[in-house]
Image 1 (cartoon, rainbow, N blue to C red):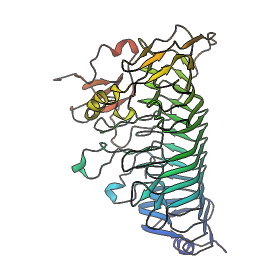
Image 2 (image 1 turned 90 degrees about the horizontal axis):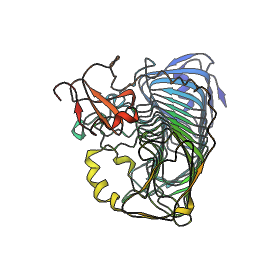
Image 3 (image 1 turned 45 degrees about the horizontal axis):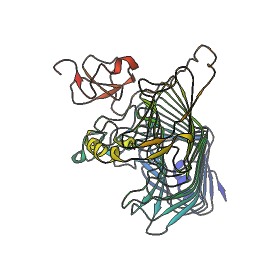
Image 4 (image 1 turned 90 degrees about the vertical axis):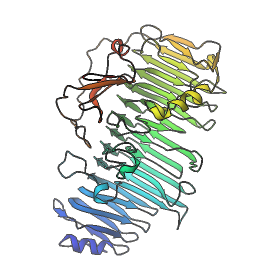
Length: 492
């Protein structure tokens, strides 16, 4: 049955019933009460363009299959929580802000910290399937914009047939985590990403198509991967025509791990995807499983690293373009045991643009607590790469390449000089007017102390709280003038 209740209380009461459709009034604004709002099995909430305001914590919770939520916007302390299969959310926009500018501190309110969130409850099921998010927008999410996770364990459940299409995550991550200050200062354990899909649990047939992340606290698109006690099998993963920009530029210097990349993926296919101006890598690919990683016609512009390919699982096939990388166009293993690397480099970084054979942990970059692990474990790993499986295309001067001391390249890579690109005036790119929220940065930037890490400038007024400049990267010829991590300025 279909109901058009006269007020929000009546609408929410009807929504608890099974098999019902609740229609809100187009153009109306509804103030939500606090608490948990259950949605009945097979029921639909259609907002018809209505707006919901949640001045106090409110969760719209789906514990039964077949729920549809569509056609509304909302702001404040509101989250969508799902625990069941056959779940559809489309044309929904949520803003974790009351003023349209500042992230709300959900943790301090004891509110749910997710936004578009699906939990797999292992106590009652081992698998959720047919989860679809289409044309959804996450604005200023306290934590992740879109998230899949297990409830009750770190492994043992599976998400199957998941689609994110035409979705946007703008400025995900507030920097308020952790709420328990005994675990560290604000931002020290904030893993907020645009899409954390999944954080824990296996994933089978995941498609992410035509989605955008801008200004993520950590990664734009993130699959957490496997380690002891946290197994994550990934099968048939596809990213197609997705974009990640300005990721990781707000990450706290206190963070114990710094992913700060556009795409952090272990296996799967990435087709026609793009990253730009990320603090670490545009593409941080782990490559743990043989013959499971394919990158086709993807590009990074202006990130510190164009691509980091961490491990040397056989058969990875990479076709990738790096433009104006700040530190390296490419670092990692490619061209091993049936794998290929077809790398195009424009405006190569100097003096070295390519490092072959290094197992560089992207989440350890700039983390003092992990420096010894990188040096004593990962930097000692060695790989044998086949030079005839590596092609480097370039404009201008050939990009300088090095082989990591513990690895070797058999034969030389093939270098191909490309015709010069047309000398057209650069396009004027206007970045979204998104302030550095969470812990607001003063503007203009005050005089004070600063330090340089991986070519990025961090500043501090008092030497305790450090923030990244809105335009953080130094010119390449200036980077070497500053010792990495050394503090400069008054009384430094």
